[in-house]
Length: 496
Image (cartoon, rainbow, N blue to C red; front, side, top):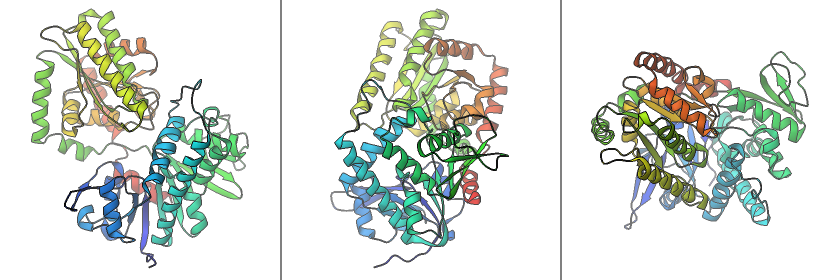
């Protein structure tokens, strides 16, 4: 049976706003998710007729998708939102998600490869790339079925880079946008990809009317890749003709890419923190309870250096720990006077490289505690069980926040900490985080590879006066909340 075209606004993303658990008796339990997209979609409300298309991620999701068929999930599970969940074959999903999206595209955009030995693009990768194409085609088919004439479609992230062009072929009447939540690699690194894959990803995104990014830096890198790989023309502010070389040369801000008779406009939307939600949630009783526990763990009169991350390779947790160890080594006055509260929540543990990285984080934390710890002082308090309330408690008490990713599209932790901070928090921030573009002026900025420099920045942050820390935090919070999720989402809609 054909799906009726009912949706004037559509969102497509790998992960949806709800996930399901399948019990032994066959019953399904729904759990709603959070994040910028979920918050953003609330801006248009269920009455708008908007539809969210996502993939089934686990067996519970697949069972819910099977029961729904080509219809939408039970709105009681989704807060009234219309959600279509795609039951993509598990082997196709695994190859597309783990084989290409997370093990290749993520690695390229975050510059994570050890190039003497990786990547290796062989016959297995060719099969995975074919699965990635099939996975994207499933989304394009569903969106084409759901959308009314001239509907607006917002496609999200590197998992679905091919969807805009595929959807354009199926429904040329639609207004299609793509948003990249990751950084974008510079051309020389991007060209590690096989030529057909490198071109295919770019062509996919250029199938849209608009491609948007978290910062100008990532938008410019995308345009430079289009010029280098496809020979596309870059359009800049005040430049009616563009320039085929693209490269980062003269001219103003990049505004569009012209290729094969079409023009794809470029935009920047720096996703901000949801101040109202964070401030209200961070004052709940469960957060107060965890705050008391953390304070007891740190001990009276001690300062705290806080980090909150997944054990994602790009987050640079290992070098952060090494910098803290160097601080204790070179600045013995901080021994027994500071605790590094490190939340390192396991991520992507189905991939061996992530399991190995998580184990290395644990090992270094143990080594620091063994080397410097005393009977009454544990230098590193490492927490690996995900607990949002505890993260918010840490935001409230932090004297210093360490956010030192190798590379990050934005990094919302850097924006959330100053919003929630109880009495001001010094931010040590990597210049390779997208948040640097907005927060760099009031942060202590570090090169994420420079352990010595990061140790010095931690020392400076710990020594910062209360007044200076409070003043910086106010300015950081204002910048961090300039484009909260709902405004971020609506800005993309208006731009299309």
